[in-house]
Image 1 (cartoon, each protein chain N blue to C red):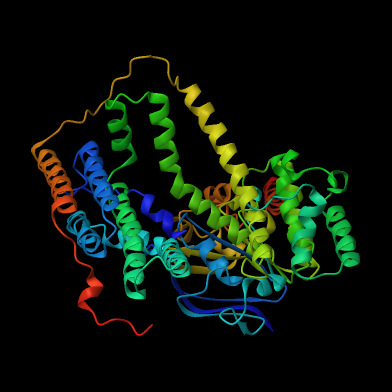
Image 2: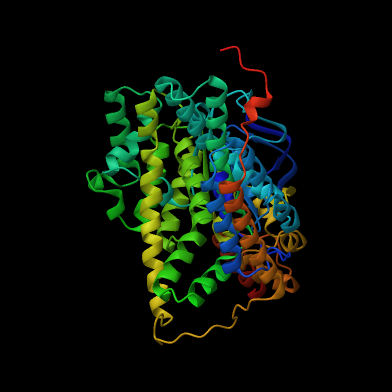
Length: 265
Length: 276
């Protein structure tokens, strides 16, 4: 469940939390795009360290590490798949380059997770919905989206309670072969889904009774404005993007493995 | 022989919240204990340590002399049945019958025995007519009974009930009370976690009062619930009948009354005496 902790917002203010979510999103997007540009290990390694100062400044180190730890399983999957299939099809000159390529692909995934989690760790659902609204997304979608985000930790907590309740009735999740293990999750999933549906119906009723959607033109107590810090972040994002494009097209990127002695296999 | 023994246990959640700060408690075989205290006092955390759902970060819990550190929840559950607050957190089967059989199958009972136990549990909680009904079609109170039946079906030595009275009307509560008392009289150890002072007053069990992760009082309901200082400390309100008697001490009436019928007897005697 710790994976979902990344979605939980804590009310803190920091230079990162206070940034306009739209600009923050553009920044994350820039990192996304640059990560997709490169398939080599070296630039991805550099890229991995770019958002780290933000984690420090925002003071979300612990939560951020937790999200990364949650991604380890999928990351190892990506690594193994790349390595095994690359090996089977012999599409690489040597095992070392294949290893480097697999590592790069894994790192690319981690960069995506990293920047994504920084964005969510430092942006409250309220800010997010404001940003969407001011970007002219219809309010119905905005509302649905923020509600979904907001309920992720709630659902995770509920899943934990359900697991406890079923364990107390003798359910052993870790027992049996693969198929049995998958089936073990039925007693967890059914109550979880039922309660999620029930919750959403209740939410809908509560919204209706508070005259949701009564006035077509909504106003907000807070309005997002671009400040100097936001502009600086925007410049940084564009700068990074330009740098990324420049390096991609005009700088030859060395293979890290050429600096290492070749592997014995 | 002590059934559950907690030795100076501490528990800290992964979020860093220290929910238990050194709790020692022994619950003997066949005892009836109510654990009370305000929200966040650590009541539920404590009882979750009794069946291994949580393991103490410091200290030790022994169930029938075996440390919870050494056995799985599934194994402990065989001895310590835990009925969760919200039945919706556990109901998932197509029929009530299947729901009750779930735990029995987990514990490896053979089919003949499962059948027998299911019939017994359905009968016990007056659910026989719903045998083939989907648990999701039942009312809140009935769902709660199904959850209870699904735990009692395997006849655990200890039954823990987390907030059993929440969302129950008066009659259901009265039924529940009689049922719990009956279970206890049959020799089961019963532990309830609750805020419901009136309910506890009527059951009159041993009361363990908690506050901020510590036990602040432990004794008979009659003593604990009538102690205004303790009540204030644990943010509970004494039962209404006790409050009345606290206001009537000038008549020379006792101040440690929690039971309505006892109160009635005392009052009748008092006024008969004063008339004479």
